[in-house]
Image (cartoon, rainbow, N blue to C red):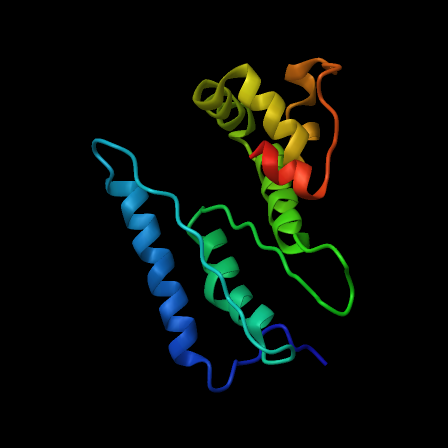
Length: 157
């Protein structure tokens, strides 16, 4: 039984809304001439078992990949984890993996480094899941990098 390509019943309006937002974000990136576009985030919430993950996959993840955009998603499952920021950790880990596997990996790392500087890279590597591995070559195993969790990680941001 293959469920991956089945239609999401009753979620057409929600899927359209997500795809519309994705197109707006893509057009904003493509058409920015001067100044910077503000970063955007889409949060989907609701009662467990209502199809949020399938909605996000169909409405954002798959279309984003087709448009050549990065998709970083995380999921918080109250029944499976006690980590209050598990969704954020999942999203940042998937984003770091996307960057490290992509053909523009070095360009993205250089842009991040230019934007935040060496100290910022150290803070990111310390506080953001996946960034330690992402920048490990450039930081040369700097002893100032220590993995932190919870409130200490949030305070680094």
